[in-house]
Length: 253
Image 1 (cartoon, rainbow, N blue to C red):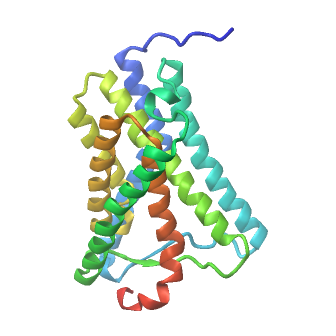
Image 2 (cartoon, rainbow, N blue to C red):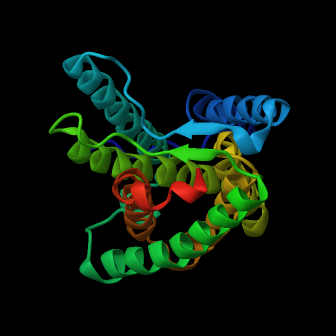
């Protein structure tokens, strides 16, 4: 016998829940990213470099453990969003995390990744040439055998956490607070752009656009898996593909 979900909390409780969840997840990340952007502007943004998944320890096993901890943290953030939504009657199926299907989940994810990734790369290149974005230092891939598998796992953990918290959880709670659909999607997109500001203006703008597209797709289709797949693929290309091609992209540094 399973317990039925409790009633929807009061508006005040929902606001507090949103504030607390964002304070321990991507809201705090956005605050830190804004400070990093201000610092970079004061130092000269065009000459700054953002390390992509740099080593966290000179000791391989400790480095591995710290990276595994990041994966666990991201998975836990997503699980927290699912748990809180489920307590008020919005289970995984209701937010689009039912049984994974080849179509539309995988094919939709591939299409979204291409729709966002190709223009995003062009925006980054243009921003680097104009000095409006920090240079991205590629991750080291050949230092240990587990680096590439872990980076791929981290990429999809990012997608899991961000799409559950920033799209499904935040938009659902805002809609329950009687916020209009368009405004809720915009707030979600602004948050997404905010915690990418440490990479420069172009990353913030590009992720706002990504957030608008992802929010619209989720609201329209009710499927969250394509967003997670697309996000994971985009990050996988950034983490691994960019590092593999870094030797051919020296002109962007």
